[in-house]
Length: 380
Picture (tube, rainbow, N blue to C red):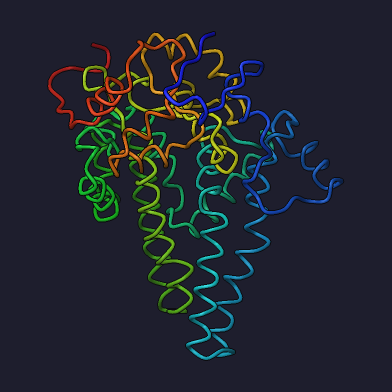
């Protein structure tokens, strides 16, 4: 296969190896620590789906949070309730908790709940353990109980980023604009919880409407009750994680779907990008393979690099954007900062139409314009 780049010394594709060899070789970094080998072996043998050790990554993220962030949050509440610390010291402890918790776990947890929602890591008899992520730990990252499935599976993947029913669609925005990027995030934080059941109802998904309404109501009660019981602790454990992670979630989705071909907005190969050999793939369960994820949403995260290799000809035929050495967040950041010349250096040609660097930058810009939906449908 001929692989062409506009800046080969940056991507450093070794012709003797797989094109995405880094993603197969780099060590996983989603979790802080592992369990004793004997305990890990027991978990693999008795708990994990198909006894696949690769599922331990998501499992360990949950274990790490349960053993570090949860005790810290409980300590914060205890100190406030028993007046162990002065208010200033309590606030410092809260800041330490918030920075440690989100800096260490936010990315890995959001992707852990993402992939485990698509495909449980547990054997059928232990499937109820999914609630550790979807009903308990999610609250520590501002994700209401049970709400991830209705939003992400019920709308985003069902509609594949096509407006208006995918409420997180990027099509309605000029995606080269920082202002539009900000408006996109604010829209979700300010009215997303009202729009979600409305969009689900439009699609006749009444069971998901009920789940989303119950989840939002429960989360609201949790935040208000937590504040009344422990105001300072609730700020750092409940309210701020909700605000910060809500913005972070939508920033991530905006940048994952920042490039959308206005002529084929329903085509997964042209409504997102694939980022290979990115350091962030080892922190986020290969989230750079976003085309592959939309093509086969139920596929475990560790099989996405293999699916990319299998579908290389489809990438070429559909003229998809493939970048090497950077992740989707970096791609989106370069776009918003108008660093198209630098972004083009990371693009690799695996059979797509050949373009000069200037032509490639023009194609970047063409896929950033606001897209208005008329009577067309995905099937057309």
